Image (tube, rainbow, N blue to C red; front, side):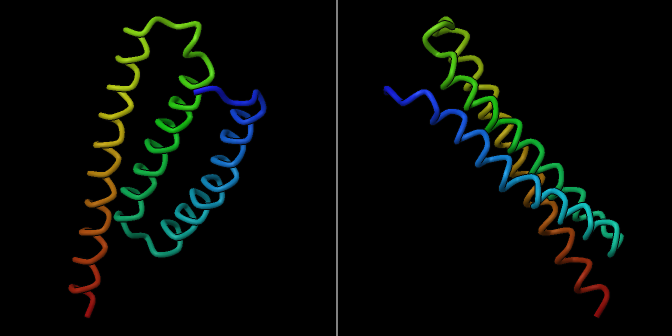
Length: 103
């Protein structure tokens, strides 16, 4: 798929413009409420952001890299996404259990 050259920069900048405030918000919530569930959300966000940035790098360099390297990188990104979703679910369950215990 052909793209204009500046699209990659927009993708990267757009991802960071969205993810940085969300990460800051989660850190503030983690400090304010002292709940470990927010740490799982933070792990999810960091893994997801790293995976997305790696995916954008593949889009940027796919013509210069071997297809085997690209395939392996995509597989690693997939595993990172799986681990990030496990962290997300663990954070949800952790915070929902805490809420039930606090009531």
